[in-house]
Image (cartoon, rainbow, N blue to C red):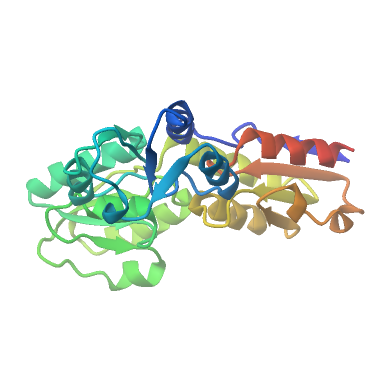
Length: 279
């Protein structure tokens, strides 16, 4: 069986930075991450074994200057950031630089009188955090129906940004619908380069193979999008979290297979799947 492994599979720079930071702090005392550091259960469990706790809310964080709290790559709202700092703990901000840039954009453009539109999943922690840096309530648009029905809340001067891991083609589609409404729109493509490259490569590989394997956590938004993109190109696309999820009986008549993985998938899991497919 011929195996094509995507060059962009695995940790993106922002996720690698966040995970490395937590591993460096693990074992140095009381260490918390605000929410799971990434959407990968294997990594979260490994860190737990090393003594790293997950704070799901501000109340979970002790008021102790010897405690370290790591803000994950998704970022947090301005209110949450201030509440964590008020605990008197040592804060390490591992927010992805691409996400930080969006925080600055929505603050700046909002202060200039533009109403903010965020293209993305309203329940994703990154989007929730971005909303928390807007002075006025933004609008989150996830699908064609919402874009078609959009009406400004308070200004016809708009600023459109995107969740960094959103599907690029879908982003373009939604922006085109908004553009036809005749408002003064400042559109900023804030999908990160790593996401665009990963999605483009997944599409290209999926179109050339008999089966496609997409590896990532079940709660990973960017992995879900890779699966959707791959599935359109290759009907035999499988979404797995680890090698144990892969049913090799479905691969018996496959001559070539492609493999990609989400931004929160560790290299050891990717390598394990890759080696198993080469046997």
